[in-house]
Amino acid sequence: MELKGNHSKTLRQQEGLFKLKAHNWIGTLNYIRRFGKTRVGILACEQFNFEHPKGRGLIVTPNSVIQLQWSNQTTHLENVDVITINQLINDPTLLFDKLFVIYDEIHQYLSEVRYNTILINKPRYRIGLTGSTLTIKDRLLLRPIALLLIIYQKRRQ
Image (cartoon, rainbow, N blue to C red):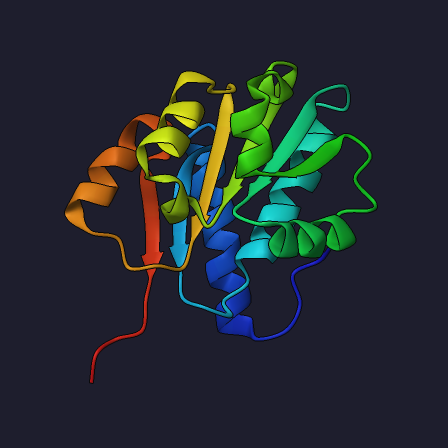
């Protein structure tokens, strides 16, 4: 997948990829709604496929609707599975052979059960994606999982 379209948006998406790579693929990107978080996630998966052709990846989504959207957009990625957070809670072994994981809408995983599931089972590379405004408490909770690296939110008028 190439980065095409809005030049400014494309540059910011590319900046997110560079920051993730500079932080050894551990971090959270906080982009505004409709910015292209899924696109950045797919590009990161493609980069992992290139760098680690035998490594398996996992995309964790908050619900089955978003899971289906990710599944439809990642059909070309043979070594990436897409599951919901509830599937992961019910079977944490789904993470055991994974080299990397992308947590879509990571702000939704900060409740105790969800948080503990992803905190205990941390693959080597972890990417969080969110479009939500994060509180200081949320940012502190994310630090051990995937430190907040970049924020692009709408400016208040």
